Image (cartoon, rainbow, N blue to C red; front, top):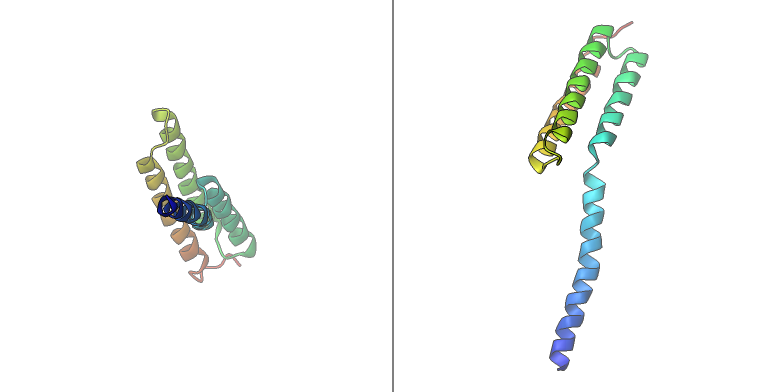
Length: 112
């Protein structure tokens, strides 16, 4: 009987310590799609204001952002559920867009 109680106690202690840590790690590294889109819009706006992006570069990146938003909206309304595969495709598009923003902001092609 005491062995079962000990095992039960250890199991509960493990669950209580591990699950919150897993949730914390996921929240820390996995930002939502809307947060990422908002962050990228700010980066584009800041890059244009600072002169790091030309008007043409900013317009091209904005068009890319609009395509990503349209794809996300299409996925969300297609079957009633935003699947993991669709989420991964949107995240890959955001990754690609983020790299493009970085490259354009740092390509020494200033507006001034």
